[in-house]
Length: 166
Length: 203
Image (cartoon, rainbow over all chains, first blue to last red; front, top):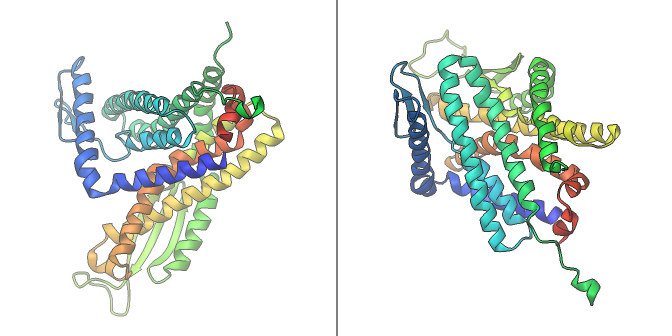
């Protein structure tokens, strides 16, 4: 367990520091965040055509209310935590890659739900928006990470007792 | 058919979560006290010439600064300029209700629950203090007039470290710490959720 935690913390620290560097921000994080904003707006437009997206902002044309998707709102940090946990676990590489891909999808699906609910909560009530934004959704996204990790653990093949057999 | 143990556990967590959030919010004036005391002692002790006082109001830490006034600000001769800004300590403390819900949803003896929760709470208070302290530093260095923040005498490298510490304290620590604590304290239960888990960790 100690080995797992040490590797987990090292990978997580490295990925998080890398995420904050300018080249990674320019090449990956900012374009990714903008695509999250566009995808959120596209999803909302399926049932609400008064919504537009530009850069990392989603705006309601009628009320003028807008949300900007910033660091911490794009699911990148939650993904980093999950990736670090999966890489730190002794498991076959194929399973790690499958876990990372499905975990990324699960986190981003939850994050899209978060952005869309926050967008409408903000138009309804500022206090509810702040609560959901700063506290509730942060906790729910991390629960999502924990669920994905626990489910993924069940797929790791049990250790073969070769030493016992010998 | 037996429901999946992971599903049952998560259902319990989701049921506990709103209760824990409600208690945490209504008790914020008490729960936030340790963070306030530590942050106050650290920051006023470290930068006594700049941070005059930190007050605790509800969940806000009101930081009172004193500075040599910049040229464009007129204050009576011999006096320093004062400035106040607030830090929302709850933004770094949502890990407490999350961890509490995880502990309450985990089946274990009452005594073990209390011990795990208390140790976890102490660590989460330290993580919250990290976040609050780095937000104070970040505000001093990056949000004030450059002439005022220059009085702190931080090098460019130190400023980068403060920026990294702030981001880490805001984005990672409150999110990761409760999960790490819960996994660390409840390996036996995780072994029940995931059969063969102990062997996998031992590899």
